Image (cartoon, rainbow, N blue to C red):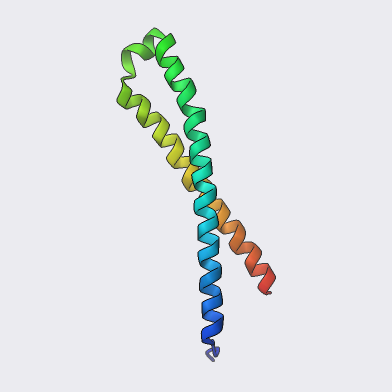
Length: 94
């Protein structure tokens, strides 16, 4: 038997989903900035100090290292934040 779902409850669920995803985007962006700084400083410092890194790590490789760390941090933190807020909202509704 299908539930009778009102338009108001659908709007409420949509608003809650938008809020969850917005919180995830904000948290992911903050984590990406932190990861970029935390990765860029040692990457560029090592590129100046170690002869091996000076030879084999060109600027493109250094940028790839930093952007990979930032991207991974963004997606991991955004996903965890969205799941956390969705779980909290499901417990509130139950």
